[in-house]
Length: 259
Length: 308
Image 1 (cartoon, chains in turn purple, red):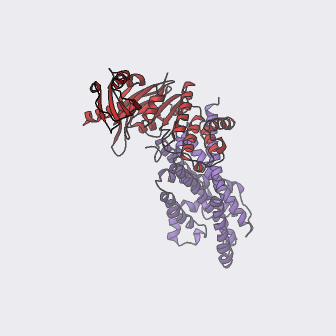
Image 2: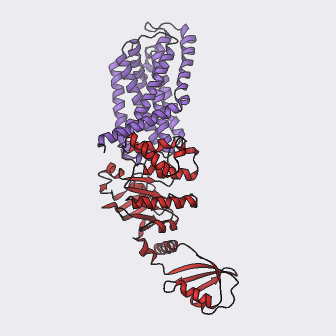
């Protein structure tokens, strides 16, 4: 007979293992597309257009955009993993397998979020490896890179989970990534330094948390930043705690799961 | 100990519709209990609340003494459900469906694998263990959900129309299996539209209609209330004149088919004596409807008339 802690551990790892099996089973849909897209970004923006752009803070344009593109793929993959997996489970009603079982809400959350985080990190590593085919990178602080990659991945996994909790149809799952996440990421300093923006747009960028995330991550790799990196980390941590509390509340109330 | 104790349970949906109007229900440990009712009566809502898939409005629910408001995980750890609709991931291998379900209940993988083999074999699905659920036939999917519910070896098993859409042979196999399971100590709550199934399997019965429990009793005593049985007789020749047959209420459905009502005070022997005296030979005999079905229809009609 297992202790309660052991039972919860087994339940959490079961959800996590199921998530890993899911995204590895459909690797052509989950791991290849971001690698393909980022390769095209590296060729078109990094090589073809980037070769005509002058150095930014001592780095080639190719080197400058790599951290942002790696982070962009982490964000998108983490978010998509939990949103599609959790909504898929709701749609097929297989989520009921977990809801009727003695699994605490925090274990459900942990299992799904760790699954999304792992996919985000794997995709980030694949994109980083591809970038090395195009340029040379010297990592400035592996600690900051690891912390930001993990925290951001967990943050957006939580975001995807919340999206899936509220979603009633498949359109609802694609709405946020298409109309919120993608614009915020493209305007989040992936392809440019926010110092290059006119003052109005610089001020507006302050309200885009992805600017802080991308810039802090870039600092970890290149050692340059437009903002205070501690502020960037604080933003990620604050948002993470806020989404964590919110998602636990939603699971507790059974929003979108129980009638 | 009561396997299930429901007290003053109410449910009002956000739309304003009241699904349960304060029902009380007790199911003893080891019972085979039928929860019957017409569509929309509140059966699935009741089961949904017990399994925490539906939020209750008020009232209490305890499973083996675990109040779902105080110790929800304790209550959940005692029960499993076979739902009416398919609710497994159709892309998962069916062995994984069982192993994962055991994992959610905190059962270590090695034990889960052994149990998965045991119950998939019992349900005749072991050969299909590496197939995705979507490749199974309707009957196989139903058996898969039963195997999945059993892999956690629950003390209380709730079956929500487990034999809907299942062929007769499989239905009888499932009946045999469920009876054995109950004899081994598993408490079973069954909802079904096949009243013959409930009569065949269950010891106790509750009938729910319009959100109220309108009957809650022992199956035998419930059946014994049936005053009149309707029987269909197929005669060898067309009926001509018959003496003393008027004591039974009968009418001819066609030249050789007779529908006849037998009161509780009369016996089939009385009927056959009269038929024999008149030289009438019977080729075949059957009940017009299942006994429980007759009572069920009467009770629901009475309840509907009373509420109008």
